[in-house]
Image 1 (cartoon, rainbow, N blue to C red):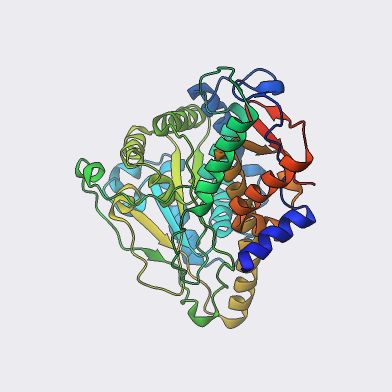
Image 2 (image 1 turned 90 degrees about the vertical axis):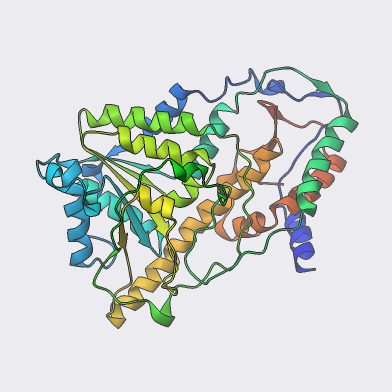
Length: 421
């Protein structure tokens, strides 16, 4: 009942999207009135977009000396020591090649995504290295939004009934599916916009070499106890169905890292690396090959959001094989520092949640050949409501718009939505 009220309210006050399915025959594929269709995603385009994400770490205002959070000396030392081996290409590398702390790939496990990103920026600044901060979900959304999916460019004319029936049935089908209940553990876990595939097959791991694992290196801080940050108030169901060429993305990543590292050391930071690798069964093998092929001053950092209230958060064996060195980030022991820490994490959660909510809305719209060009104009509170009830709101908005609009706008085969009524 609450959900239904939310849907009706959203449509009523205008935060629902205005959609036109067409009361007259309209070109559906090949771009319609929006101009020539895009050629789709290519290796060169992926490489180009990744290259645009590379920035100079020296330009960052985030440093270890002026770190915006509490940072223990031990955390700083273990991270810089591990990074030194690869970013400075020291002779020490030949004496540490079998030691996990000298691994090229380091896992950062902590309660907040922005904290890990700040660590990566401070590290790049410290070593005067380039840095590529990669949020795979956000990157893929923008990539597909800019270049399309590369599907065949055939102009198809459909009648009102065909177009309306297909779009409405697709939306209603996704709306009526029973959502899976999420097990909330009260932590800072990111609600990923990517498909959370649990790989049941061991095929991808049988061919992976056994790497030595090292116990997690923890900073000298105690557990968060009962003062952890609040859990997300509105858990989101993620059901991404992006067409995704894993090999192309990994190849493009390698090309960028290889080219940049010839002139400067570079740090690649991957958000939610575990979910990124679980996106498809191929990813673990492709990423293993990437690591084996990399050389020169290149360091990989992967973020992993963990619940500070639970100590039994198991690490996937496949992930620990690719990232043998895990640095655990835990809250400060000092009570005053802890209060400040919790306050910062709460604010960070809002920032990340806003981005995730917007990505989720974009995904649902794109999966139904819809696009909203002014999505950024929606405020934080509205994105939370829209994201949670996006499918219901779209269905209601479609019905509303069919009764009130006759001239829908099309662009690259998609209906253009507006965040305004």
